Image (cartoon, rainbow, N blue to C red; front, side, top):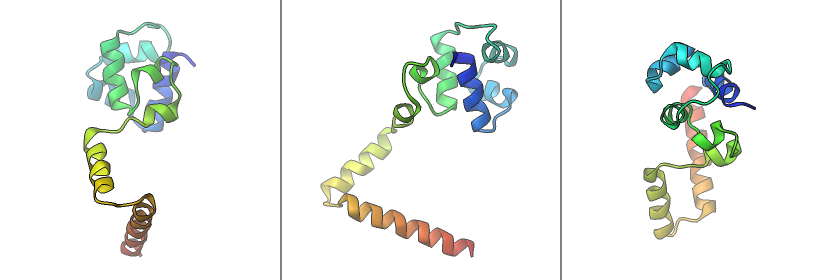
Amino acid sequence: MKVGETIKSLRLEKKYSISELSEKANVSKSYLSYIERGIQGNPSLQVLSRLADNLDTTVEYLMGQQNMKAARMSVDEEWVGLVDEAIKNGISKEDFAYYLDFMKFKSRRKQD
């Protein structure tokens, strides 16, 4: 898949219009349209970086050099810190899974 096709696919997955993504990423709407249609096949790394940030992926994924699972595995530092703290306090994977299930259950009960 080409860069533009990948960007368009992710944009549609996130339900962004071209206008919304162009505004969020600070890229002109016409330039984004050119990228998506393959007219501009070699956007700058700065533009790709801003688009990737707003599409929750990496530049490498947009360029076809990484699979989506690996791209989505990048985790912000706050999450890493929380997981480290949980591990240091002896919380096991099973404890975490139990807590997650409990929170899902609690959320479903609120909806009912």
